[in-house]
Image (cartoon, rainbow, N blue to C red; front, top):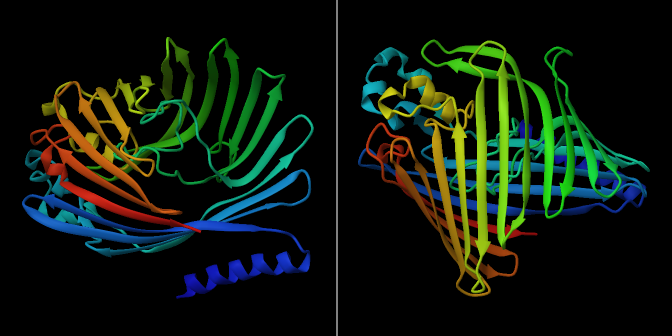
Length: 390
């Protein structure tokens, strides 16, 4: 109750200056009920949620922009889960009964400020201060040079959270630009930095990037975190060739205490005259293993907690979408581990019921045998989402 009162108070405080200074603030957002069902080990479970997002935007003068959003999320149904239920029995059975509770996780109601930033436009640069979106790389499902976000392969375009940062964008002529980001932490040594040069050649845009940030790889047998420096050197490109959209992304990770590793992405897409859209993307992670019988507890847990992006080394993603009508779109995506041969299939339907009212239906079908990257024990099910914009 206190959190609700504080959040409402913040909204009131934001509203007071609007009237006092006759400053126009655009208020918009959406309401999103979501219903999910899943079968795990022959048991059917439901996890449902209600989400309210409120966005605020305002041009404070000619050169200053303010933006913020609050997220209110309520969960109901089965809100307590145990990660061991998803793992192969050869791994989960090795955990002593008295330690199983350490692998519990919960979906708790939350109210939080997702973004709150001020953007100042100077003559030769833009400066953005505060909690803001940081999106890096050209990959659709995976982004080797993005150490801020991890996408859900069943819904990779869903919005990403904001991050506290100081950002400087400097255009250089009409072709090049420089991006510098500083992410402050407890002290200078723990803080992160990023520098990117972006340019274009013919029909292709490209960028070169270097960054440093604190990273954690946890030992989930002892729950001991290994906090270390992670440095990434890499780049990306995107463009068109013979009617195909083509993109690529690569990052080499220098780790302070653990093994250095490569991440790479290459993808292409094409839209037919009928409107049918095809996409294919390949992902490589040298930390991943090629034999599923070697997957261990840390491999799975670090994947579930987004400390790494994959369990197996080589993965491939396919997507096909087709417009049934002007208001309805049907599609299907599939992700496969090339190393262990397991596949997950995600059929989708998106339908605009009314103006500003969208319906989305997803199915998650894991077809691999137990122990593989996309095994049936991960849980087959579906999701229904309705979003109403205001």
